[in-house]
Image (cartoon, rainbow, N blue to C red; front, side, top):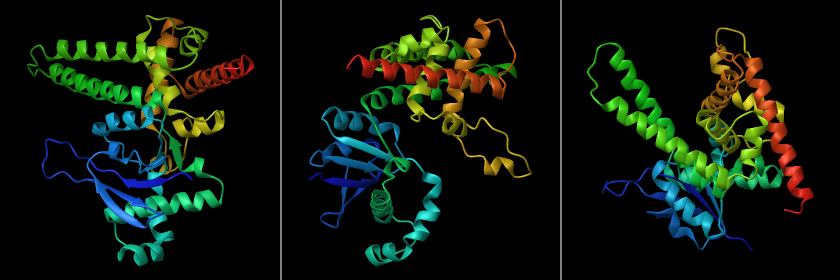
Length: 300
């Protein structure tokens, strides 16, 4: 029988002696406890995290996944208020509080899992982290952070701020991490270079390959319609439309990078429109389906 643990993760850099620990709930023992590192949980077969995957825990997750543990994370953080209200009485009975607490959050992760198991829809709330995720997501996060800093310094330079050699240093750092992402994507993502070539990209189209890698990692659904919704490739009318539209800005950024590269290679310099983005998205999804079908046919 698989042993499961449910965790409210915390940002806990070792340099900070006052950092908070990860709070865990073991439903089999009905026990709360704390750990400094997720790597301490190797006695469990399945590990369920909340939606907060902090930069400093990727190494711990890599260690768990590499040792054969199944690690899942909660994918619907915007539903926390609804979840807390639904399990209000259970939460109060078990923790003595209805308000947000570390123990309560770990407990609620378990309650969501328990209910989704009964309804046979755990895939709607939890997503499995693969070796590709734990290898590439930290690099993609680093690239995004470096690029934002580069943009900030470039903007400062445009208004007369003396930024010295910072621009060239950051440009080199962004270039290096992007090349590392592409190299790892080619090694880790099955059929990556074939999908890229099918879209008209070659190994020198680094920006486009970064966009493709990010897209393949963050979009898990093979449904075109679900992916359109996840990426926000639709219009919402009304004064409060921006509040109603929930989508992954990070995943959309990778699609825009990929689409821009393909459009530029085709001699188009316009800003991508929704129809351009949807066309490229459909091509990526169809290529992924063909690749998986070919792998099954070859007995891979």
